Structure formats: structure tokens, C-alpha cells
Image 1 (cartoon, rainbow, N blue to C red):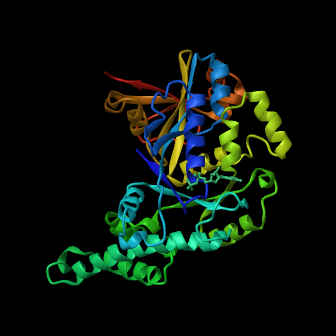
Image 2: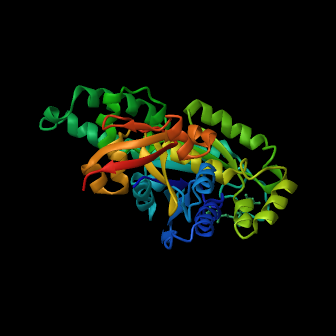
Image 3: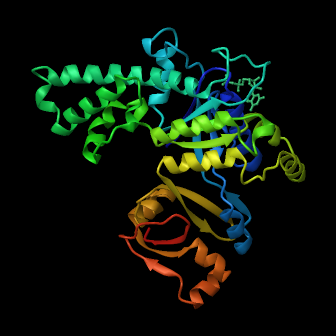
Length: 365
Ligand code: GDP
């Protein structure tokens, strides 16, 4: 199960965002009885307008969206890497996650105290990144010492040794390891270390309601910084999202119109989609009378493995998959029309599933 960690300094809007994500899932899908798995672990729904189209086409009784798990990592502060207090626990929390959503305060509000006294997103980003880099440096140094010892020498590959050196040089400057140019072999050699700053990151620039449409200069600073790190930026207003959750659809529309944005442009949806993508995930669909469902697979998975996500038996007994792309199906209007036009493909074991494929598996039991 892939998941993402929500990190950031205290009072930047992490919990507000986390709660909006979880409440949104609860509001959208009655079939997630455990939207909050633990107080700080929840489920977010991956928005996908294709689901409604398919459900309407097939008059499905139920619609089941894809989900990702999110973890609210509260309490990451200066000094966390020194293992003071709960620091270590928070870092361990992040280490178990596959991607990072880094919330950055880009809103002014004198009523909300900033831990460093003023709003300065780049300073905040660097504060957090420094903690993560220090924690990684400790891991890397420990590993290097092992590899350089008499007994450790034989177990380290040349790739690992070169990767450790490259990464150490960057971490030493307090910068994230994800900026380092590593070969695929070097990356996989480092994987067991679970380095925090190698995980993909998305910066969530948290703005006030009035600045959701246009952004502000803080957002620009975040963008500049993210560009250097090759990271994505999503503008979101945690406060707006937390208010949206309790509104009826037409009230939502009115509320958003007043702010000058549409639901699609609104940050939360974009944020979850972006997270899904940096996790290397994609969607295929099954659709029929009883339900239309989005299934989550890793990019590059072949048809039998994709079938295995539904049930082990589907993978074991896989014969072939009746497949059509969502775009073709929508254009043709129905499966019947697709079949008549010869647009339904019968794909075998070697087929690499594409995002948006609508599939029906044939298998032996
Ligand atoms: P955390 O410590 O990072 O989890 O931050 P919280 O989510 O608890 O938010 C801290 C305070 O900032 C709360 O009083 C929120 O209501 C407020 N806040 C969060 N997001 C926004 C926002 O987008 N705009 C404004 N004006 N206030 C916000």
C-alpha cells in the first residue's frame, strides 16, 4: 500500500489539509467506513471525472474511486534530526512513506502564530529540508563506515559506493539527495537506506481564500525553489477546503465562484492527483451494471498483475483481457458500439496496461 506523508512546520495548515482530505473521502464514498485508519493516517479519494461518465454509460449502481493513504506527520521542528524528544519518531514516520507532501505557509494571518515569527516560505522549506538532510546524512555516514570496514567491504557494490559518495556531498551542504544525478543501479543500491530526501516531494503552497485564484509572491518563491529541486508545486487553501466539505454541491459552486476558481482548479483535487502520479500509480477501470470502479496499479504493470489487484485468482488463471481505452469508449458511446466497430482489443499476458484502460478479464478458475 503506497502512501504519502504530509510534513511541514507547525501551524502551516497540515492538519486542516489532512482533515479536509479525509472528510472529503467520507463525504464522497459511503463505502469507506474507515477513512481515518489511525488519528494521523487517513484515506484520500483520487478525483477522476471519467468514473461518472462510465457509470452513466453502464447505469452502474455503485461508483468506487481510487484512493491513496495519507499520513499527517505533526511536530517536525528544528532539531528533529538530533533525536530530541519525539523527533526520531516523526522521521521514522516519514521513512515509511513513499512520497512527501510538504505544506508551506503562504498565507498572512496575524492570529495564527508563525513558529519563526514571519511568513517566509523558502526559509521554512530549507528548515525542514535541513532536518531531513541531517537525518539522511546520519544514515549515509553509518552505512559508509560499515562499507569501509574490513567486514563490510565485500557486501557493497561499486554502484552503492559511488552513490553514497555522490549523495553525501550534497547532504553535507544541507540539500536534498533528490537533486543528485544517479543511475538506476545507484538508486536501487541506495533504496534499503530509505533516505527521506530521495523521496519524491510535492510542495503544497497554502494560501488564504482571497489568493487562491491569483496566487501571491510567496507562491512564486516556492515555485522558484521547487524548480531547482525538480519538484512540483500545488496551490491550495486548506481553509477553503475545510469549509467546502460541509457544503452542498450548488453552495460549493457559488462559494468557489465568489473566490474566482472552479472545483477543478481547486487545490485539493490537484494535490491528490499529483500525489498519485509521483507515487508512480495509474488507474484502470472495470465497469458494469453493479459497479464502476477505479483500480490502482503501478505504471508498467502487465495485464495479469493488474488483474491480480482485483483477486489473486484472476492473476493465476489469467487468459486474456477485453480492453478498450476510456477515450475510445467515450467517443463510441457504449461497449456494444465498440465491439461492432472492432475497437475492443483482446489483450494477452504481455500487455502493459495503460492509464484509463477499461478492462474485462477472462480467466480460468
Ligand atoms: P498544522 O500545525 O500545520 O497542522 O496547522 P493547522 O492545520 O493546525 O493550522 C494552524 C492554524 O492555521 C489554524 O488556526 C488554521 O485554521 C489556520 N489555517 C490553516 N490553513 C489556513 C489558510 O489557508 N488560511 C488561513 N487564513 N488560515 C489557515
